[in-house]
Length: 160
Image (cartoon, rainbow, N blue to C red):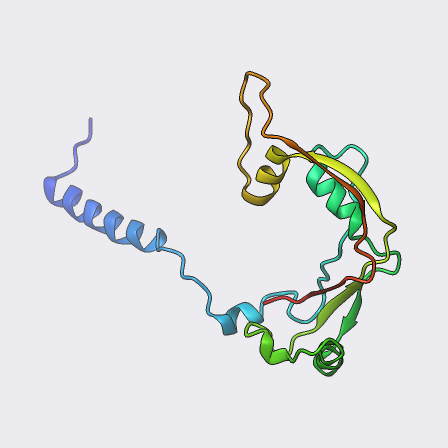
């Protein structure tokens, strides 16, 4: 059996340690400038409110999605159009410190009023990702929103 010298083993271990440390470098958070250049800053990705599928399991998110749908979809606004839209409701782009002139997806809700019920654990799951299950069948409580009407609500989304 071939045996390596202690010197060779020491040099090999030092090289492996040096190269191994460089390959496991910690990720560096992106700055705001770097984030603004990520795909989507050019308006190529639009966030829209979509109605939920009929087999969705979370009654809270399904109900809200149904309430905030739009038959026309989103329109893309440039910085000047967004400033005009904000001015119509008494705001300026300065009210949004993370807005830096990027394209904005504007959705105007026109869904008819909806009635839906959800358990508070559905809201907990949607808001925090925490799943509540008591095992005894005990409920955190149920809320019913009757004829929830979000028509006329304007939703603005931009990548930042």
